[in-house]
Length: 502
Image (cartoon, rainbow, N blue to C red):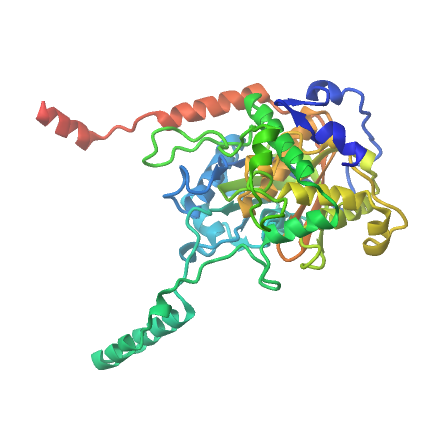
């Protein structure tokens, strides 16, 4: 693997081969040249805070819920953590990919259930894995235009119960039967049913335009850039090791405990973080391109249930209300490219665009939060950024962008380990960026992600002056939240029944 990755990606026997997180940032100087207002005459937009449910592997503790339940919890938790009056929220933008028909505008339904004002409009957006990025930037646009001052952006995904439809022929038959006016007409339709009609129409994580699954595309991309199986396994191991460390140290303070109905234990942490060994990872068989592929279940992100929400505001409104922002939301860009051969290269296109728009260089970025769809996708993007040929042929640049400082790259783990509920990941990336900027004493953070359809996003955040990340207070908040969730409710009828039995 190229030299810059050797010290940052290889993990052996559970210990990282680079210096401790606390000491590695001590020598970094912060560039203060960037003004507090990126454009004269424009108002600053600030990121107050973000929260999320624990991200769980699909089919586990959340399996009997609805996406609506997780979305509601994220909105309730955001208000409790920040402590703002619900009436100040002007608008809500919420993302989702796999829609539940009954709650198609899930942003509105979840907001009503969470107790927000019925006079607060809400709409739902979808842009694959960058849906909640789209929610954030839609909110930024509404604030920049002066339409609103306080907006909640979020996203939810629920892969434990995806919509499975009847076959097209069966659906057509059922619609006809619904319109049939006589019993004879209905019986005639009934006799036309064939066994093949009962085959369900299963959803597929595949590109509609190409018919190819993202896993196959990831395998081809890794092969095209010469990414080896070991490089992918090493990166996956790095992600899980860093996430486990962050979880143990209480750094994942965006996680809000959730008391799931009919589940005894309060869910208070992500359950997909697993630190394996190199030998264990090497034994796994290819998941998509068999038998010679390099993408496995361990070096790919897993199907995840989860929701997230964040409060963004005009700086003026935030200060007037006495709220303490964590970061400025500075600029963003969306990109799209060939969905066949460059499906997962969104970061390689978005990163240089954001840097150019901001007039910043790689060395100015103190925090990188990049979505990890596959380890091979991350490694391929890093190689693309470090390629003169790629820059000249596809980016219209004379020379390569370069490789970011990987000591600052996804230092608390990423989607491979924390989990990837499609429409919730964007807010998770933004919240981790804001928290890491403060914790690691950095000025600028850059977010980038790929998405289905060959699309991608890049966003720049800047630490807010004097912003603080209270790890101890966050731990206390989570502790008392867990206690409150575990307090049994008083059931008068139940007590009366017990007294009668006695």
